[in-house]
Image: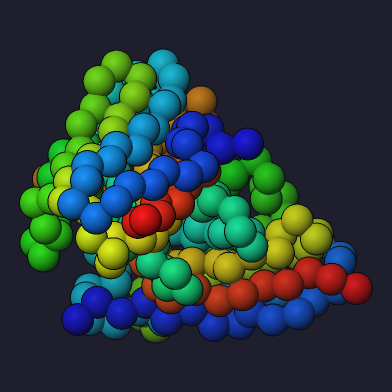
Length: 120
Length: 112
């Protein structure tokens, strides 16, 4: 069974940093592109960042570029999101999500999420 | 503001049929990128409902169907059931930012 388990969320002050982790199991992690997607309270989903299976391609939303860094450790079956210079508007549930490609189309398979609250 | 536009809410009585629209532009849906739909039950993570515009994963009832035309896509739910009450999100890709995934703002379905 595919499992994606996020951790590392919590309360942080504006300007602070936090590192999220996503532990993957039940599949060959090194073969899949991975993503972070967030959802602010009562709001829709917002794509944050993506990383290819070998880390050769990395992409960020404009809203986090220069502040967030996505990375992965295929030996540890883990995905990470280093978040610096956090702002109140970064408050959200952060989901780890796998590109679940079927032929040429790639919907997402999601973890359960971890809540990040940025507040003084 | 979300890149894809969905109605904030729709409602219907049990047994009825409802549709949820997802409107994009020439840089995303209109550029030929696939649309996926996710169902998010209260307090849970999203789950894929429709992928590749109109395909259902195994286990998803055939009451759910998807379509795409031009710069828009639609999710149709027939034979509404109380358990369908949830948030529904559409997702595609956009050529304006390399590697980006774009979402709609989500639609809350209320079963009356």
